Amino acid sequence: MDPLIARKTWRTLEPVHGAIYFASEAREEYRAIGLDDRMTGYFASRSAPMGAVTAEVVIATFFNFDPDLVRRSMNALWAKVSPAEVLAARLRGADRMMRAHAGAFVESDEIAEAAELARAAAMAACKRPEGRPLFAGHASLPWPDAPHLVLWHAQSLLREFRGDGHIVALAVEGLDGCEALVTHAAAGDVSSDILRATRQRSGDDWLAAEERLRERGWLDPDLAFTELGRQRRDRIESRTDELAAAPYDAIGVDGCSRLRELGRPISQAMMAAFA
Image (cartoon, rainbow, N blue to C red; front, side, top):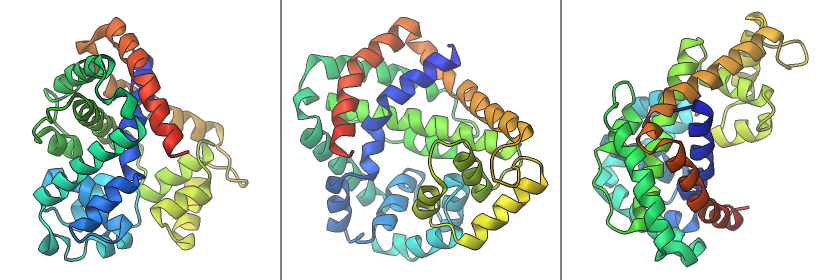
């Protein structure tokens, strides 16, 4: 599969999965099982497919969050609640979220067709779990029955498959978690203020990462990419696309085009709800 076609297909459907991290419906379900802190709910729900893992495993697999934030958020977590309880709450949250914000599509033939296409790609990814721990955890979960949840779960698998590959590409370039965020900010996609706030990176951490990248020749004195830095960042993104492309071979170019056509209005409904 052409990596650019695969990336376009993933991006079109990504809001179907990604909205779970912002949905009040999910937070309400986490609170109902005793997870009152928003970040605890996030780390618990995304790591639960791997089992009752330690904070250190989450630091490694999530890659760019402040390590102390992860440790605080996960302190005694699995003594309070089991991974199975968290996963059940997450699925309930996904169901409520999609019914609330994309309800017009939930019972449609279009979402059923989209679900089958996305599932075929996700099942192809399941044949290649090596080196992808977050994906492998999600791939071990049972498939939901309802088509809208099949679509959500399939896109979750494809997202984690891509994400694990992205971490591989970052690690090959020798970047740590904070340095990866600094390069993301330098690329201009998201501001450094937003990245620092959402990953709760301290000012000292951020400044130290910037200095290391300047010393390495990636950033100039104004924190813009040098030619070397731009080349390396482009290489990371290209390699990420290449590593994420194979599952979409299962549905081919026409299947990707059809999945984007079917998924676009669903994603737009989800984006509108959280804009």
